[in-house]
Length: 139
Ligand code: SF4
Ligand code: SF4
Image (cartoon, rainbow, N blue to C red; front, top):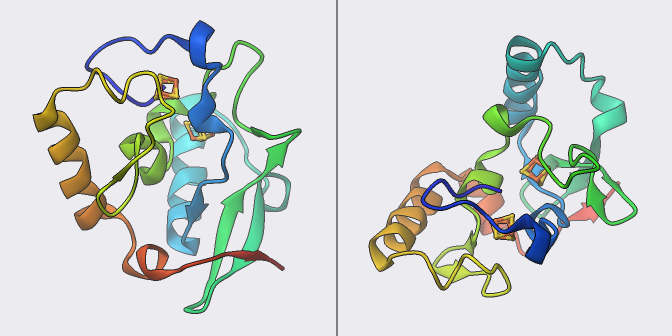
């Protein structure tokens, strides 16, 4: 759902990428809430859509999941906040420094330059503390 080079085959993957919690900083949550209101006229109540998680470096916010699906995924397996989705969603299938989620059907179709670009963006755009965390615990 995040790649613009070629349409995702959602029928095949059922939006696999939206079955993990994206973790955001407090500032990123505020930005997402503001942008979702601007782009989609959504009023996102923070406690309804985000859960606090704790790492070794601090407190963050995970998008809530419902029955293993991101709360923003609609019945057609599409993102309801696509234009303002979190950075981690935009960079998928790159899921860590230098790591690609090979389960994504698009991952092997992407040109090498595109993957390199996403990895570079991961290094530059993902919050330094989030990148450094090993595990997140719900609090
Ligand atoms: S898992 Fe891959 S192919 Fe499927 S929606 Fe996500 S990015 Fe697109
Ligand atoms: S915010 Fe959107 S793109 Fe990100 S996991 Fe949720 S539904 Fe998918």
